[in-house]
Amino acid sequence: MDALDLARWQFAITTVYHFIFVPLTIGLAPIVAGMQTAWVMTKNERWLRLTKFFGKLLLINFALGVVTGIWQEFQFGMAWSEYSRFVGDVFGAPLAMEALAAFFVESVFLGLWIFGWDRVSKKVHLASIWLFALATNLSAFFILAANSWMQHPVGTVYNPETGRAEMESIGAVLTNNTLWAAFPHTVSAAWLTAGTFVCGIATWWMVRLVRSRRPENVETARTVYRPAVVLGVWVMIISGIGVIWSGDVQGKLMYEQQPGKMSSAEALCTGTEAAEFSILAVGPLYAGCEDVDHLISIPGVTSFLGTGHFSGPESYLPGVYDVQEQYTERYGDTTAAGEPVRYTPPLAVTYWSFRLMIGLAAFSVALALAALWFTRKGRVTDNLWLSRLGLLAIPMPFAACSFGWIFTEVGRQPWAVAPNPTGIDAVRLLTERGVSTAVPAGVILTSMIVFTVVYAVLGVVWFRLMHRYTIEGAPDSVPDVSPEARAAAGDDDADRPLSFAY
Image (tube, rainbow, N blue to C red; front, side, top):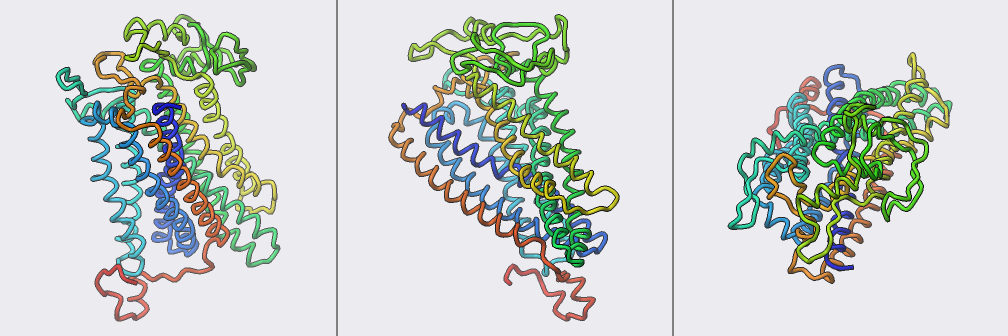
């Protein structure tokens, strides 16, 4: 493989791996904050126990996410320097804002939350976890602002003297309609992931304790883990609605901005009205769509996803060949090296990642419905199948989020920066022109091997820590060590100044 192919693989490996940790942090932070809020308001110890339990899992996941994110930035600067040269003025702005306005806030208030249990008041301590949760979601906003600009460049002008895209309006970048469709979809998917995570773990613990038949265990299942199951279910329901709504908005915007992505998602060869949505396709998708048979199709659904119409002239979707012809006429038919340009993404990856993104989320739906049924009217259950479903469902939204990210990025190909269909056509960049020209293939291959090995080690560490503390479960009892509680108990040292030293 040449440097371009290796750089693509390296970017794919580091990005997808890093994104495993991102959704859980985004979604679990507000859930843990909600648990702590319930404890402060009700003074019920079960919410403190759940806060400590899921808070520990949140910290492990956040730490691994930070480490993998740093490595990802390193490979990006090394392997894609031409891309950085072309878009650095624009792409770097939201990333800098993410570091200054979000990551620093995350770090400060997460530290305050970790070390401040017995140092600051309950309200200040509670505010720290909420600020961390807010900053985590704000971080996602700025990252998506940068990515959405790649999907739909706005607020930018092309400088022919320098051959670079230059910022014209940061406001336009931050109000990009692509961003405001992607952000609620990404955050809703993250909350769905976290809701499934909480519900799946709490379901497993509830069933395990009830099956022990010991009265104290059954009571713990009823008073501690059942509320966590119900909380996870409602997070899944609300976020699931958000995923469906925002996904519909994104589909219609995608049809306007990147018609080739929507056509490739269905492997649609030529333009048609009332385009079907196939559950399964059989044939050589890697070679094209001529010999592909669409099986178990639902009439009109792909057209509705793209246009809002199931049939009629308004439901027309262009095929991949139509997009190829249109883009060839507009942007040329060869690269700088004289190679023909394929203006539609790889069909096999686009087609299947789109379906896996949707299909794997069905496990969360199944868990939510089953958990609602078995916990109705205050019940707990020893149903082993519910426990198994809970464990099976936990990794599925993680995978769905990853396939959604793959669909978004692969579906944009061959563009690193897709052209805006309404103008500023000069602000566009083919992926092959973004790779570093001064870095040989051997260096990229070596770094990719190193990254993969390091990520594999980190993956083992992450899994073992998450497994260990999940098996430990919520602590049996957690004393209230806040300054207010210690002052009420007669601790003369309760008002000592803030210190991060244990």
